[in-house]
Image (cartoon, rainbow, N blue to C red; front, side, top):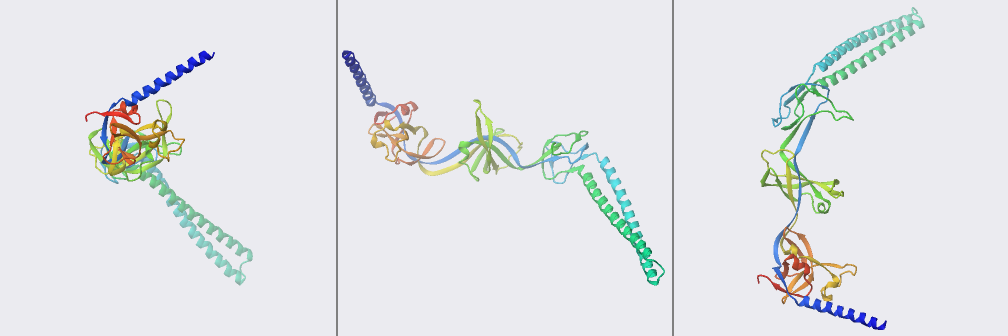
Amino acid sequence: MKRKYWILTGVLIVIAVLIIINLKANRGKSIDVQVEKVQRRNLKMIITASGSIRPKRKIDVSASTIGKITSVSVKEGDYVEKGQFLMQIDPEQLESSVMRIEASLQSARAASKEARFRMKQRKNELDRVKRLFEKGFRTEEDVETAQTAYNVAVASLDASIQRVAEQKALLKSARHDLKEVTINSGMSGVVTRLNVEEGETAIMGTINNPGTVLMTIADLSKIEAEVEIDETEVVYIKIGDEAGVTLDAFPDTTYRGEVTEIGNSPVLSSSVSGQQGVDFKVVITLHDTIQNVRPGLSADAEIVVAERDSALSIPIQSLTVRESNEINDYEVPDTLSAERKDIEGVFVISEDKAKFRRIEVGISGSKYFEVVSGLAEGEQVVSGNYKAIRDLEDDQRVEIKGK
C-alpha cells in the first residue's frame, strides 16, 4: 500500500510540474496583437429603435345620430379646411321631429296665454266678491270659492309656463340633432381614411358600442415618430434629447427631431422563446417637413442620449474582463471587494508585454468607450484580434502586428 501511495504521489507531482512548465512556456510565448493609442475623441451615445410615424394631431369623425348617408363630398387624400362640408346623413326624420316639436311649442304658448287671461279673470272676480262681502252682499263662502278659483288659475298658468320651457328644450335638442346630420370638418387637414360610402348607415356610439368612425382627418404639417425602447435603455432617455429619424420610404434622408414624450407604462411583447419583453413607448416630434408623407410609414430612430467632447477613449473591443485571481496582486486596487471576482480592464503594452489594467469607462459611442480613469493619453492598448484579447494573460509577451 505504501508503495502504491508513493507512486501515485510521484505521478501527481510530475503532472503538476508539467502544468507549471506549460504555463511558463505559454507565458513566455509571444502572441500577435493589434494595438491602438488612447486618444481624445468626440463621442456620442446613441440608442436606436424602430416604430412608425403618425400625425401629431388628428380627429376621428364619428356619427352622433343614426341614419343613411346621402352625400359624401370628399375622398381619401383630399385637403379640407376647418368648417368645410364633408357629408350628409338623411335629415328627413329629424326635420319631421323638429316640425312636430315646433307645433307643440306653439300650442303650449297658446295654452299659456289662455291660462294667463283666465288667471286675470279669476283675480278680478275675487276682488269684486271681496268688495261686495265688505258691503254685506256676499257671504264668506263666496269669498272662499272665488279665492280657490283664482289659486287654480295661478297653478294652471305655472304649469303652462313649464310646458313651454319643456318644449323649448326639446326643440333645441332636436335642432341640434338636425344640425349634426350635416357633418363639417372640425380642423384643417388631410382625409387620411374614409370608411363609408353613400347609401351606408351610420351608427352613433354608445357605452358598449364605439359607433361608426366615418373618416379620419390629420394635420400632416406636424409629424411624430412613435418607437419602442427596451427597458434597459429607456432609463438613459430624457425629454428634449435630439434624434434623427429615417423612413423606409425615404432611406436617403434623415429628419431631425427631439424626444417629446416617454411612456410610463410598459408595452409588453412576447419573444421567440416565449419570454415577455418589456418596452416603453417614446415619441419623437420631427422638426423637418416630410413631402408626400403617409401616417403609419415605418421609421428607424437614433436618439442621442449623451455626448462627450474631446474625451479619452479606447476601442470597444479592447475592454475585457478577467477574474481577480488571474491578475498580479499589485494590479488589483485595494478598494476591490473580496466578493467581486470579475474586473473590467484593458491590456496595456509595456516593454513588449501586455499588462492588464483595471479601468473605469463612461459612455459608449458606436466604436469607442469613454475612459473615466485608469489610462493616460498616448498609452497603447491591445485592440485586436478578438481571439488574442480573449487568450491574453497578464504580463504575457506580445508582438505588435504592423509595427
